[in-house]
Image 1 (cartoon, rainbow, N blue to C red):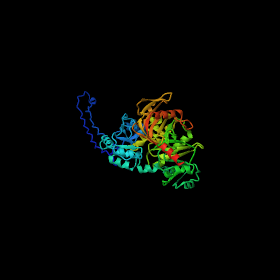
Image 2 (image 1 turned 45 degrees about the horizontal axis):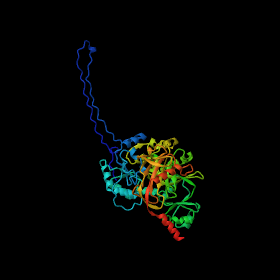
Image 3 (image 1 turned 60 degrees about the vertical axis):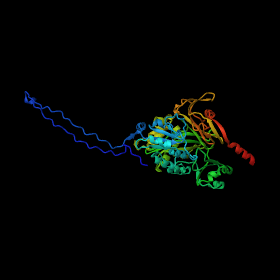
Image 4 (image 1 turned 180 degrees about the vertical axis):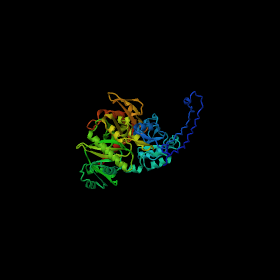
Length: 541
């Protein structure tokens, strides 16, 4: 797609300067007493200055202050198009003209920069976020909104959490430039099997593994005999642990056999006693900017039905030893450098597994995009002091030259004093039921009292508005009129301070918030699959 170049990159024709005209001065005769005292008086010489030459040199942004100013003056329409605006919360405060186009209106019309189409048009069942985005791009209300906001012939640029080749075609048809590498490249890198191949090229350590097709349990035992019997299997693509399987025997394998054997290749890992962590980064033309390492909440039954499912993050000073932080940052830079060699640029996230038995750190997986952890990264003190990672990502697509000392940024962001403490909890419906929601908690700031009761305090679209650990920002995903099903996202709690103990268990405050928010939902049971399973079991005994 061709985008009209701005004046920063267009050739500027220099005007021809006129020659300066100098009027000659004529000496005026005077009557003098002495010849020696006679001095001619010259008229004042007027010199016309040549017209100023216009420069054809594009603007170059030098460092963080120039970059921040550039985005505060931005005139290009910019969008984040997705199911919700959660992953890019706050971007509209940094960038003039940044808007969210969302399928789910999490703020019930109270967020000034969220646009959500009011009318539902016929569509097939959504099978992923890509389908949602493709639906939005074809929606007449969305198309009108984008068209109205055009700047001359410039339609604008868009970010997506997930997109496919169909999204690219629809965006091109509308004149939107996608601010991410091509979907084909992202799909290749998003493949968990390929992640390990990239890690090998980059020199980043992985948990001992093999890559292989699995035909049956006997075949699995054969190809993984060097790894032992306690295994973790991941299929190439998955969501929040939904396709991560823990296998120690044939019975456990049989539960997931159909999903495993249908794949051409899976990743088979030795199971280690590990704790999860995550780190976000951005590949730029000047190097890889690396944010601090944060903890991950994984598999808590209070929040997710999936044993290996991601359900939150924490970021706080001294969360990890200096050695682990240093090694994670080094691995992330190496991986970012490899991504750049592969032709990738922009935002990415790595999951690391920290072995609790030997202290080693291993790469878990790659997410070549903004992620669920991005809200934590982009609102911590280190990012607010300079600029959030998404600023550096978008900058790569803005057609402007810039200078940046990436090493200095990484040094500042690595300092523990530049970290403040935040936690987020991702709450899913954990029961195998289908329920209709008749009441749901509002998005905004909630306050918790000493007895564990919570109360809606005030509307705010920003988590920074949370003033203490007795408050939390809640973003509802499921709302009144929606259906709950196993694995459905209900909402997200963000608060200051920690939600886990030092041994990676939910603390009392976290459990109180989860229970209290769940208690704000009122739903009516439509179908109980648990009873059906129990009945089936009793009949087959």
